[in-house]
Amino acid sequence: MPAPGVLGSPIAHSLSPRLHAAAYAALGWEHWSYDRREVGEAALPEVLGADTAHVGFSLTMPLKSALVRLAAARGWELAESAAQTGVGNTWVRTGPPAGAPAGDGGARVLNTDVEGIAAALRAAGAGRPRSAAVVGSGATARSAVLALVGLGTPRLRIIARNARARGELALWARGLGAETAESGLTDAALGREAVTVSTLPAGALAPRGPAPGRPGAVPPVLLDAAYAPESAAAAAAWTAGGGALVPGTRMLVGQAVAQFLAFAAAAGEPAPDPAVVEAAMTATLDAARGA
Image (tube, rainbow, N blue to C red):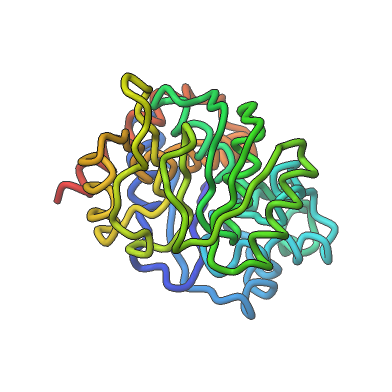
């Protein structure tokens, strides 16, 4: 029985099981299931090395960077998005010998956060921004930079508290072909760019509207990757100031759809319609958020 799952710590809050279960129901895939396991970074090599029951795993914090390091040690394939960012959120089995542990066979590591960010911006009509700001300097910020560069954004501003970390991220972005500027977190005026992607933890983005723009200008877009209730104040302040909001839940759905398709392909299922998967996940997520 194909059985993906999600790993991380803490993991009880994860909405991934509900999203994937909704897609299975919409497709009539009664033979599929999706579970969750509490796994810390130290236990990840053993868990993936001993598992034979799962076609793949979604991985959340604190495992995303550890997965890429483990892939290098085990000789697993890295998708370009994972190789470039040093971040992986998806582990897919690619054909170990029958009955062999996962560590003795093939696997592929992906970073579908990149696809999730790009999909969320495209769905909001902001899929070709001429300028963008990325708030934060961690794993998700690297995914945001790669997504924006992939969308053709030529100018990026990196906004982060830690000067060294934002400098390193800006240098990496320049290596991808983008022009960059830097700002500290406390002194940064948001909304100067067409798109702002915040990768800060839930509740860490200060509630404030976008910087005043010229009359008639297209409203600046904010994608807040956090999707917890603590982010509501920042979202409300942004829209009250005339900005347009892309909820982080749209990124969550986008990356989950990409994971779903990867798991299905690894299990040899006929390719499902991505629109059906996305619609089922979106409806379930909207219902969960409204509860």
